[in-house]
Image (cartoon, rainbow, N blue to C red):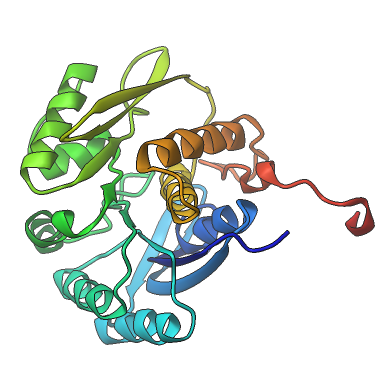
Length: 270
């Protein structure tokens, strides 16, 4: 298989391998592209929760981004956990230096177990300075509620939140509907030209750790390979759904999905 594109991932590390940088690398690789990384934080966690978070200095994050891109220029950037305003400002500055055109932001704010992963000042600067600088933002419902200061209960609330994010400067939004109480998953893609609802059957499983990281990395990969943002979202949702259906059932808590679901191993490597 030839490498289809190059993706720079800016995110935190998950020691259990189900989310964060580890999930991002697995996703990008499984979809046939080349993954590079800039680690923003180191977490000690497993499927039952997060034990500790050690932030990486903002200067070191910038060095990772700029030095990596100077040698291997990325076709797209996927951004995950940005824990402080200093980190966000450094990332904004570095992205301007490397002049990358395709940027996907997954606004990671709260861990699956409920632990907050980002400061209030970071949330403020994310809203005021960063939303307008990325091509797509992929919040889940709790994150969309934080960003829009609203309560989301119905699909109409999701659409309203999407419009609010557009007013804040976001160009394209995919609000993930996994937290809605319904029999199907409704993910809403919205921009100033169109609104599309992706309807899929809800997969009942406790093993959904890292789905947000996986989805945004898959979108970045498809987008880097020339797909439109809407098509990239559609294909990435299918990839995540299949990874949920084939999940390996690891760990005692919220286990990981199956990132390898898209890979076929040749006989010579079996």
